Each structure stands twice: as structure tokens, then as C-alpha cells.
Length: 135
Image 1 (cartoon, rainbow, N blue to C red):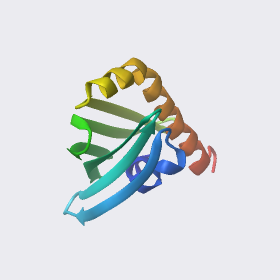
Image 2 (image 1 turned 90 degrees about the vertical axis):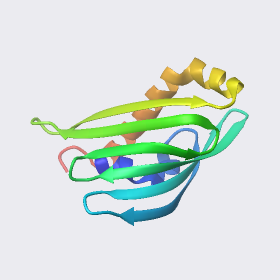
Image 3 (image 1 turned 45 degrees about the horizontal axis):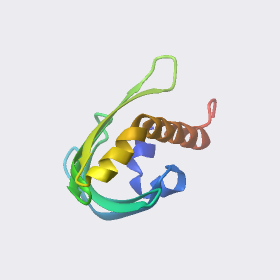
């Protein structure tokens, strides 16, 4: 699951509203990797690009994201992954953001919970395709 989330370039293949992804650069460090990436999000009449700095911590099974540029006032997210004794993986995801555009904030705010559920389901579906049970 960690590899699935870390593969930002593949997001347009399966994530709702993700129209494009581009990796600006990757910088390996001693115990982590820094990646700068752009995502283009398309929702109704809105189409916005935003950049983020993604810190990949493979040994800790953790991914942190910070906002760089685009339509947000701020955006932070954290992913953590834990192998389960009975198989599978427990994934924790936290995101906090605010748009600069009050109209966009209001539109997204109204459907945020539903949008997050669709995104989680998209990751689960993609994981089932890539990592079938018993394989």
C-alpha cells in the first residue's frame, strides 16, 4: 500500500478528479526521499494545478505532504501504514487544507466527506487490482 500511495505519477489512472500528475524532481536523502510534484484537479467547472513537496519515509512506512504553490492557502497531509498480523495493511490518512478562493472552498466543503470517501475507495480498488488477495 505504501508503494501505491508513493506512486504519485500514477494518480490520474485511478483517482477521481485527478486530471494530471507531474513529478518536478526527486532528491534521495539518507533515510527518506523528497519529491516535488504537481497535480491537476478537475472538479465541475474548476480546474486547478497545485504543487506539493512529498517526503517519503519507506523505513517508517510514512508519507508527509506539504503545499508548495497553487490555489490553496495551506495544505498538509500525512499517511501512515501498518502491517496487520492477520494480513493486509492498516492505513491512516490525515489531510487539512484551505483554498484561497472562498467560492471553491464553499463548493469543496459541501462535498468534502463524500469526496474523501470516493478517494479512499479509489485507493482500495486500485490496491485490489495491483495486490490481489492470496497472490
